[in-house]
Image (cartoon, rainbow, N blue to C red; front, side, top):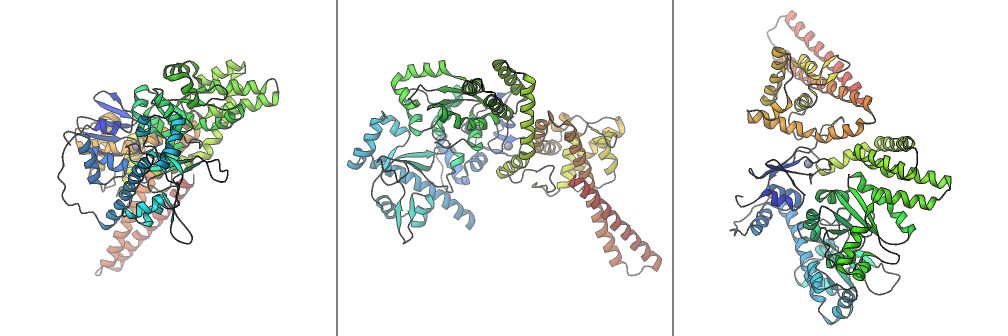
Length: 631
Ligand SMILES: [Zn+2]
């Protein structure tokens, strides 16, 4: 751990920028547009203020790469040239099974890659696979770099070989390298295809793409691994592993369509390139790129119709606040052929000279096509407004809107109205999706504003109150005509907190209010001299990060609704904790009645009356909560 430099380990997967003594980047564990992922090199730890992910280099590798503890240690040891002595590791049976299944799959993929690579040097491999690579101008160095290979044209050649090497039929089938036949037995999936392995960000092989070289119309030209434990098509960008260092260095990522485009660009000296592999881009892919850079240059080839069809895919990049440029290949050329034609220097110059801003490119293209047809022009404006409406950075969006309106000599206000209309529509329908995306990455992240609060915390109600104080303490609660701090302190000043640390934080607010009529400064709490208080404050304040970002996103459209939502949440949080208190009192009073054997009838009635009053209060609070929640 002493030898490990956390910023290097994390830096393999996220572009980190120095901020004072720390580093800052986009969190790989949750979806975010503003960096909140902090790396502290002196302490060797990371902490995300968005989702709460935190730990050291080992934790990072385990969580990010889904590897076991020993594997993470091995990884670090190899990286820093440290020899480790291995003792027996005793995982639970489920852990062992999970790990072995995943580890076995990694092994099998590495095994298959080396088999395909070697097969390229056989007579069949040379005649078909290697000659294809040669024809495409792919060098031996690239074959090595990208792990290219050839899968023999026998039905079971690979499967048999793998079985002889102690891989089971189940393993082969679940890896997707072989397919189970109805009548039993396996068939090689990639038979007779040249092989392009897919790597994950740490360089392990997770799947394959195979291209067939015959002109048989009945079989797909390209075939990929199916979705497996290791491979998710939507989360993979071909070539990103080989490109990530160069993307960070150049602060730009070229995006192409095919595997061979990626390889050709590398051979032309351009290594910051990845391919979406023909499918339209996904959210996850955009996020992957965004981790390393904010700049994307899309290389287009093909005719106007083809380009027009793929324009929509670029909107996903805009949504993730990527700054997108476009380079159009000349007629009849693709990046592969054109780079070979111009040579490395010529092609690099071409890309530098021809890159144009995506929005301008799209605007020009649609308007050139529309000519003076008013209907087509209106369609084009709507289409461009849609792209612009995806940009979440308001300053950037407004700059583009002005630029586009000028370019078209079109009234900017009309364009803005259309953009806002589309944003509003999407925000209405989309917030649910966003939330589920966050939860998919980190199930324990708090779904604020929903009834259910999924926090890994024994005291969610108390945590909620503290979080609200930290985040909104100084804000005005309109309906109560006082600050959030006053409201909460007045409502809860008698409550006994279960968590000692929350109690102490609450006392700081209470004292501040009572003695100085002031609200504690958030920075004072985040950096409190009591590490427990600082820790809890950081933890809770961090939890609200993603949510506050969502709110500010809505802010420029839905200011009124926004404040009401916060109010409702504050009030319901207070009600919830009061309800909890009442429930406890009810339990206590039940116990008292049960235990009271020697009471006078009056005393007994008194207890029962108290109990009933509490029950009534419970119903009231629950009703209040119901209305707040449905609100
Ligand atoms: Zn995070």
